[in-house]
Amino acid sequence: MGSVSKRRNPLRPFVGSALVIALLAAMLLSIALPATTSLTAGPSIQICIALDGSGSIEPDDFTTMKQGLASAIGDNTVVPQNGAVELTVLQFGSFFSETPIIAGPTVIDSAAKAKSMSDAILATAQLGGITPTNAAIDTCTQQVTGSVNFAGAAKQYINISTDGDPTSMPDTLTARDNAVNAQIDEIDLEAIGNTPNIANMLEIAYPRPGYVAPPFDGGGFVIQVATFSDYANTIRQKMEQIIPRPSPTPTSSPSPTPTGTLTPAPTSTSTPGPSPTPTSTPSATPTLTPTATPILPNGGFETGGGWELSGFQRSNTNPYSGNWAIDSTAGQNDRMYALVDVPSDTKAISVYFHYANTNPDISGNICFDYLKVRVTDSTLTQEYGATQGFCTSSTGWIRKEIDFRYIVSDVRGKTIALVFEALQNSQAPNTVFYLDNVVLYLLNNITYVPIGFRESGDIFSTELGLAESHASLAPPATPPPGRDRGPITDISEVIPTRH
Image 1 (cartoon, rainbow, N blue to C red):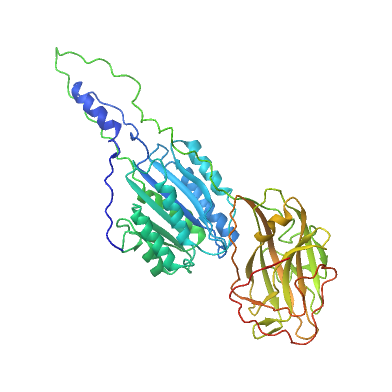
Image 2 (tube, helix red, strand yellow; image 1 turned 30 degrees about the horizontal axis):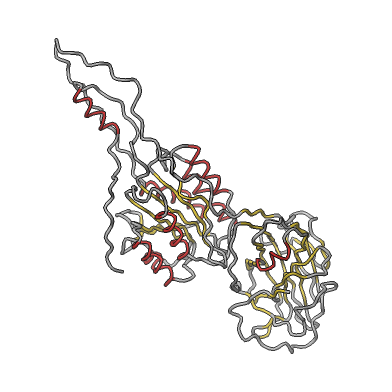
């Protein structure tokens, strides 16, 4: 990357009002003046914070990260509420490389502005999916450079909080270079957990070369964060590092008033305040915030109810979290479903859950006993979409995300059934499947871009003999005996079937 000339800022922040008053005091025979807040003509720095919302982050950890950032922004000892800082916050993730804006460029000039941004962060639903760090940098660059405060601010920062490497490292480095060329001064990162490759994180940081902090030695640093529980302290430390603190205003000792000299007029009791924040400052209203609510009844199965079970049963033998999960019955076809009303303004439907299996019936890359997820009408007779069958050779739990966005136009305003099926052939071994933490999100304000997907650890069934176009799910089809379904030629990308 070639050298980039930094623009010269025509509107450097004014010196503190205390200095201005001190000069007046010298003219008025050295009257002592009280300290005041920094006087600005708009924010001196712009910061865009991008939160990783990819599927590798557990929902509880994502919540912990949101809480840590929201707490830091709401604390005026961390983020001053005097108009010196403009903040933008976004999330990046999903299988569609999305970067919804949680809060657009907002000048933090009051406790109300800080709280509004904190509340927006806490209300944000996790995207899941991949880690499009390049898209996060691109969107931050657009938000910062597109702000009305870009020309007047002295410095621009992008901050990435992530638990993993970018899905595309080359694209991310290109995004970094584009950001620098657009006059972004600094890119810093928090690398959370053991997954991020620190060498990659350092490559993304700017100025180059990046370094691991603390100790801090200028910009372009990466902070290694052991756990999500440590993130709250880390983001506070980072904010305190990059946001300039007002220097204490020196109190000048009054010079003795010579006898017989003219006594200066009394100083006004009102302290000169900061210049008002420009009225063109964008409001804190999010510009593209997904509205999402996990609406499934009893998705953790800690109590009974909410689901119609046929063969599946609640069990405490192998829960992923809590005390209960759902188990299938070995050697038979099972089904369970829950009914959900889909709002008419829904733009996306995503299902998240954990699954595991014992005694997998696998040959090569084919599952002969497998799970399947379907979306049907409320009577289970019309199918809107379905996954291929899947299982795992792993003995542990797998977190899976299914994106049913491609069926949204068919189901808006309708009652749908979210159906899980455990389907088996007639031969041993007989697999037992486990389900836990099932969450359904209905989102709006999201743009659909078609793409395929596959979860790490999944193996898929070709399901020859199980026609994907069958119109009814009652009763579940019985797979034909024998291992005659043929190999999968490419399981790197699986696209759900639309009917």
